[in-house]
Length: 305
Image (cartoon, rainbow, N blue to C red; front, side):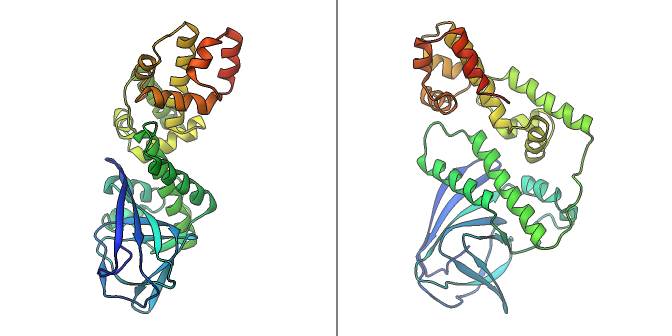
């Protein structure tokens, strides 16, 4: 990890799940040359939020800054220097080995020959879309609201990791390979199986890992195929199912909004209200007071899949 042992580096957990963990680190190092040799204890990706640091591999070095993602391979050794006095701050993504191999395999099938060393490079570009999605993810994790679903975090964070890896492979000159596994019919069946599972378990606290297991697919492959087939992420699709179901209940005069939220799989009334307000610009209680068939139809049109 960045930062020499004698330099204070603070870590803070932002999210911990079975598929990945997300941590913030802050290093308060001043300008300095290469420090003592360090060794990475895991395969991780770091996206920077402030400052910069350099990793030295003999006579070569790789710089981490807000434009450049860096990859730490388990067991790799390096030295760290700091080019400025402002310190540095970033986000550490550690993906479960089985999921990380699945992501990399989509880009480089030779990863199966080196399962413990999935990264073929030490750095890659942090593209604009990744930069902004990374910042949104961290901001929402830092807010720590009850409306933040693990399902959304998993889907969002894994896609950030996958897009960063794809950009790094492209920069390293690896030819883009055709997507593996399956036919159009296989992918269609996978998406339909997922829809069936969501409908049957709408009121439960679902996770990406659980739904993927139910349809006999790996989490990343499943999430990617589902979005390709439907045009929306699996989490977005689930949220739309729940919100459209809530409109019918509200039109029927539902009074207990907390019970409604829990029945539809939201973690709390505030979670439901926040999602509802983001989609419709008004609260469930406001809609309930003024519900009409025409109003609900107009609101539902805003939820096109």
